[in-house]
Structures are given as structure tokens and as C-alpha cells.
Image (cartoon, rainbow, N blue to C red; front, side, top):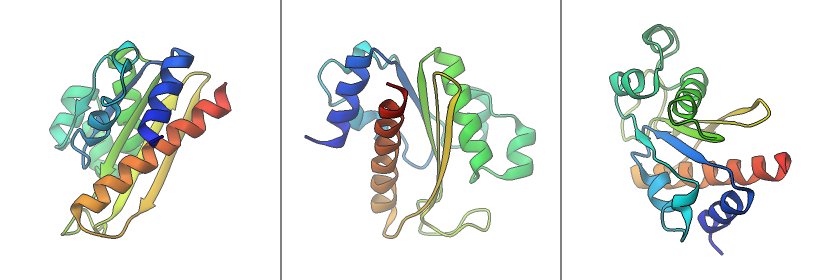
Length: 158
């Protein structure tokens, strides 16, 4: 069984809703999750917030936070997840922000990724990752790490 199938089935079984706010993954996470039959019961929608302006407009990340920490930061990853969760009123929200490459961004090398996850019972976690490889490899590794974060969270909350 694939990790996205595990995540999808666990969400469906637990009746936990989920949304995502994706920057460097550009919808790859939600696309993989959407391959799970029945996922529409717990996946009301998602956000692709590729630019700083979209992070602000779509999921309410404050411009002050972006200015002070940069878009490649744990603080912005957390704010993206929280904003997405608040906007769609889901149980969980996950976010991805970082540098897929090939160039660095805000002084961070390619492969630097921050993943934010918020959920019920004041659950919140932010993960900093440093992946190797080309743009596609970094994006795929980010999605896989996010899937694992959700599985771990579901196991801890249940």
C-alpha cells in the first residue's frame, strides 16, 4: 500500500478532514492524495500559494511575517497551515514552503523545505528538511515527508 493510500484511508476511517497550502510542491501533495478512492469525503479543497502574495491573499499569512522571516521559514509554514485550516474549517492542514531549486532563495540552498502541520487538540508541528536532488526529487521528497507527518499525527491523536 502506498503512503498516500495509508494517509487517505486513515483520514477517511477517522473522519478527519484535511486541506493543504502548497508552495514549492504546487499541488503535488493534494494531487497524490486525490488518487485515493473516497477521499472527497474528507478533502474539501486545497490551496496553491506559490507566491508571497498568494500566501497572504489565500491563506492569510501576514505580510509582516513574510517580511520578517521570509517565505522559506518555519514561521511561514506554520502560518500557511493555520490559515488554510481556518479558511476551510478542516481538522488538519498541512503546508509546504521551501526551495525546490536549482537556485537558492532568501539565502537558503535548494532542497531546504519547511512543512507545517496543524490539527485537533492543539496539535502543531513544523519540520525543517534538507533534501538532495533536482526540483522534482525535492518536491517528491517533500510530499512523502508530509504524508509521513500526517500518519504520525493520526497515530498520536487516535
